[in-house]
Length: 478
Image (cartoon, rainbow, N blue to C red; front, side, top):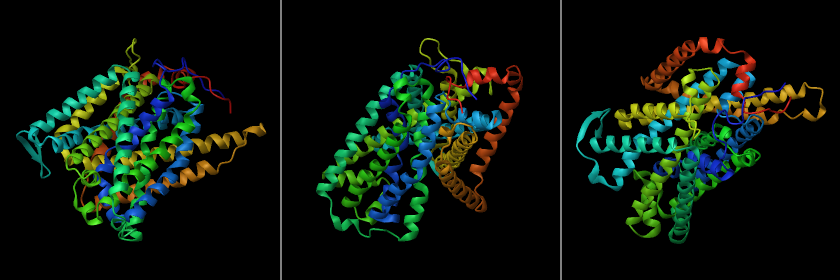
């Protein structure tokens, strides 16, 4: 069968290059977790164990990345996973996928909005201002609220200026971050001590296993690529599998480049005992206390790249929902001159601001919700490729009979990650922590309300008309 759409980009401008897609996805991957967590990584898994965990974790996520690449080349449409779900599992699954992705990306935006003041006031502590109130034992200050709101409005303005400008800013931030970390690695290798590397495996097998099981989640940012396919240049679309593979490999290298010099310049006890271990590592590597500030600046760059990618992805998946008329049509509106989905960029920015008053108390639930959402999407993607290849195997053309081992392996990995997230959420529920369940329940109920409210819009379109809106262009016949 063949799938079609009205125009290549669904109304959005199609000019993002391969480099800009790489920057968008790599910026989403690296995030700010390495700044905070490198100490626990080294303390738990050891210097060798933590590197091995990230290498193996990246290899585990690679089959899922290849599934993304295969689907992205065949269905290069804005919305990515939403489009694939529609093609292979129908409208309800497509809506559920888009709604889950929106929760994931909005959660990331809220996480970054809350984290910006934290890093900013580590650099400029005097700007924190008076305390407004305390929530969950954590104080929220005037300066933190102002910084979070200002950063949110700034990124919103950047996105409204167009995807090309946002991508160029992402390029500068990502490659600046890479250069900064490589310099740090060189300094750490020259000034570090090999005796700090012991014990090589930290607390032993349990510490290594615990880190290995969580590392795939640190690579999930490559999912920003499918959200941008409707705005990618024809040359970039031909390289989607290669771009995703390069992003994952580069992310593996990045984590190793951070962990090795950190382990060389700090003892495991120092790494675990520091609230910002990378800042301490920078100070030791360069022999200058001022360089700890440099580490915080690098962390701020990484944070902004992740936030920029998450805001882009959230606005695109919600735009695709409205454009395909599975959700309210207002979500599918765009600026005619710049090709920007104005309504959804503003909506995601407002939802981000809703999380600001909760401060750091929101960080842990956001991480848990994001982990569950992304692993469920991974499982769906593997299922799409499996169905695609099974359809091909049933055709009369012998050239279409491809192996099903890749999607089966990806599906097994994804199911394992979903199970681990489910166990962790169950543990929290058993301990009396219902925050994540309450957020998921509220978002689900809101999704049901949105789906119900758009029923007349959906009924007004035939399947052929909806296919015409959702799919980016004529695709290969199965």
